[in-house]
Image (cartoon, rainbow, N blue to C red; front, side, top):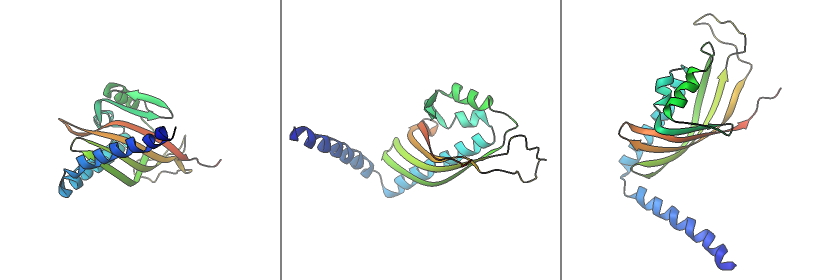
Length: 170
């Protein structure tokens, strides 16, 4: 039994060492460039979602990329695009993306964790364009857990899972 317990620590350590060795093959400049490109991708995701740009939103994902929200998976660009197109076109929302931690696995794969606070307008609030929008608080606050792949189109999200951390008190 002790050997099984020992192996449960050795195997993950070896795999982690291998992925670190692959990332070590990249120059510091290459790694920083990858991280900058992925950070830009995350910002593009938020801006496209907030502006209800369904095509740009879907294109932040790989062809078969998956978004998991509340345990519900949405897979494929067509499904992701339809999700935004089906949103209330009068709704107003803003993703405040903040703390990020991106890990480059190799030249074509990376993972990331990003903190997000999402705000939305008070339901039924009629706000003239250009006027400040009243909010009762945040809609969601949590973390995105991501997997990225470099494609012919550049870096794209292959999987994005949102975990709500804080709930607004009632």
